[in-house]
Amino acid sequence: MRRFLVLENGLVGALHLPEGKGPHPLVLAIGGFRSGFSDGRDERIASAGFASLALAYFGAPGLPPSLQDIPLEYFEKAIDWAAKHPLIDPGRIALWGVSRGAELSLLIGSFLPKKIRAIAATVPSSAAYGSIETDAPAWTFRGKPALLNAPFPRHLIDLTLGKTKESPLSLTPYFLEGMKDKAAFDAARIPVEKIECPLFLVSGEDDRMWPSAVFAEDILRRLKERGSSIPASHICYPGAGHAISSSDEMTELHPVAKIWFAFGGNPRDNALAKEDSWIQTVHFLRSWIF
Image (cartoon, rainbow, N blue to C red; front, side):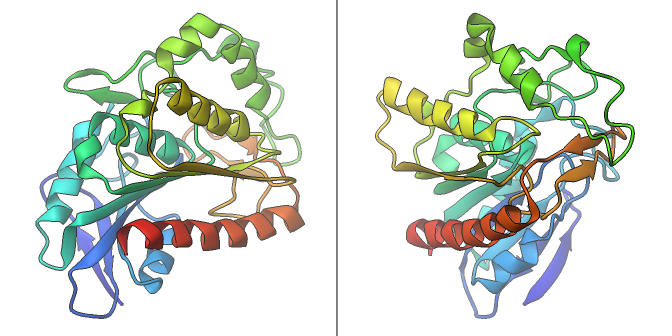
């Protein structure tokens, strides 16, 4: 396996290339609220025979300090850069996003459908949410908010929680409360019917960061309602929480907001879901880009 830092044309990331002369299929690994460009998947993806580009999009030198006003063009630039790499097959580029990165992957697939061959979205959202700290948009496209922000009743949050690991804050109830404003939520739903490639969704039934299982079913429902014919499937793991792909933890300290969040699940089911979802996701990617 070969690893190269990518620090050019405004991009910040790491490219892992498997053994062999190529050109290789590429998985663009997009993380969630952690800053930087590695959540532990990139090397493992390369060990499975894919090229892997782990891309930072905030919280690194030269990038926005927080998840706010992130241009989708940045990812378009990364895809175009990868497509020109002599060891990457431009016709076999997939996205694998986790959490906010899963939301982002669905947006990329919706706004840039011709560039992507497959999308795996782990613990996704079905709508575009704003910055965690403010009401500013998280994502922009062509200089404007990509979509309206989905409603999130920040004013209702119990601020006595989240100060310690022992009393973490669960955000899922607030996301569910925001979804009750059906008109506002519908206006922010990601237009997944514009995606032109196969889609694989993974969620945790006990996700306490946001209701990923509810969101995943909403994605499938929208695809059906809008007449999409892409292959789309969803695996939901009972007893598992939000950190299916990157951790077995049930709580985590947000690196920007400095709040302890509840991820949910229990150690046994989180670990089982983490391993099985890895196997299922690699199988999905092999089916469509290998």
